[in-house]
Image 1: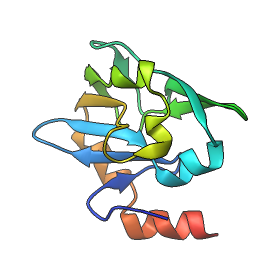
Image 2: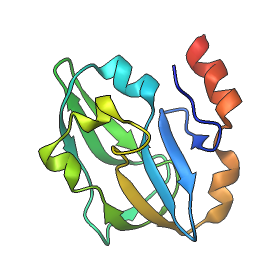
Image 3: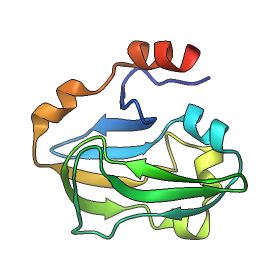
Length: 126
């Protein structure tokens, strides 16, 4: 299973990519594999505030609905509108095309609490 080394991870299976002053967030290949075929993605609006470890949206598959948990606090500055019409992108390309939101962090130190790729791989291999 793919776990890109250049990303950070939450225990709730979200990935975080640091960019210039923002972070891009999505769900991991492990999470989408566990969920099965994704049929709907609900995301916050641009301008919404995310609070670390609080739900910010959901992913619905043919099996279940799973909440998305914010891996970091901040303001949503961009959302992936393509997922509204093409939720299957989460299954096809969880790290590239299926990013969910871009957030301007309010507490950069929260990034220090996220997992490295190696630590995340340990969690999902148990």
